[in-house]
Length: 110
Ligand SMILES: [Zn+2]
Image (cartoon, rainbow, N blue to C red; front, side, top):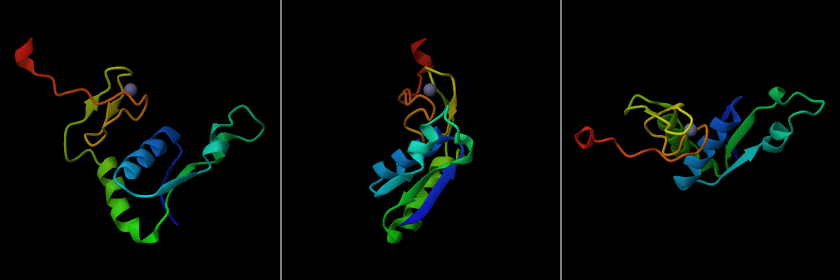
């Protein structure tokens, strides 16, 4: 197992996990339970959720998927129709609320 990605934003980490997993790689999350245990004695901010790739051989390819996902350079960002958060072009679901990416709006329809 190799550590693929970690961030203090567990929603983003969860999104990365989904993208990498849907690309066909075996991944697992670490620290997910601890991070969701807010309100306890320990600060959840101390623990970042981690995405691990199960097979070391997959690491290089899986990291490319992560980089492509995090990079907004290869397309247009889109704004979530539900929560108005900006999403990178490669995001098929809103990182914040998991609403699906809207279809490209056709100005001719106005
Ligand atoms: Zn959203």
